[in-house]
Figure 1 (cartoon, helix red, strand yellow):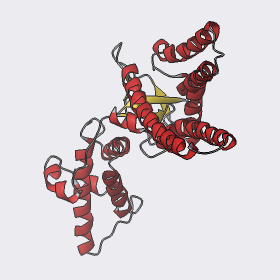
Figure 2 (cartoon, one colour):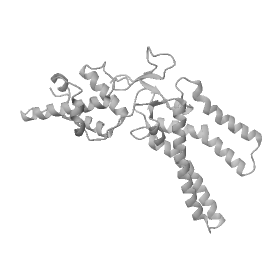
Figure 3 (tube, one colour):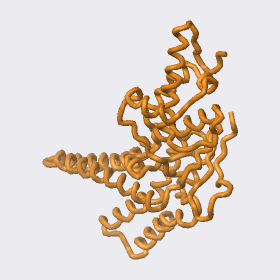
Figure 4 (cartoon, helix red, strand yellow):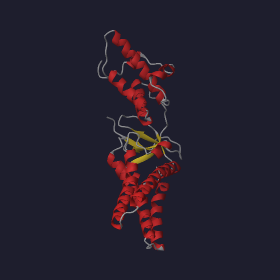
Length: 294
């Protein structure tokens, strides 16, 4: 397994956002770091979802509180506070732990979270980067809101809270990878990936895509039935990150490493050609179960 590494790409132009990102498979994805505006936009979209969900839960809670005693009302208020805490922390962590490693806001902005060392994004990294958001933003703002509602807020308290939050919010402006403190601690990047679309089944687009590529018999003999099945899973899952990794891995194995772009079309064409070759060989009693069988 190739050593994973993620460093600034050699020969990149000054001021660009391209970074070298080598996966454990040895594939350099050359990812683009998300801009501050893109990250802010994704966060605002996610925050809108959280607020709308919180409004609905609050309305439900108020309906439950009607006619209840003071003691019960305090218990329900504690449940509301705990629910809000779980919502704003669990929302980001659950979505980023998924296969797309992105919240709905990030997906709309074509962003995702990746580990800076090139390895698979791990659970403790997602938890760490999102736990820091509580310290960076929600905790001081919640403290200020509580102080204000209790009539205990002072000018010094408000100024301290705003300065605390401001320092963390401005942190991405002072590093070239636009990292939050949470990203720095967790070892993550937020990157921009090209969006692919798979509106039809693999078979329905086989011929148009296959006509754009030609594979030799030697190139088709590299893989077998097991790899064909995995390739079909990648195409149906339609995850742009997985398609980029798989396409570049196959291209390097076939001696086509210098060719880039159109990973989706390339995978569809190779899938179709490989499927036809394996089916043709089976007619003559020849089966290739996987790439290790010669």
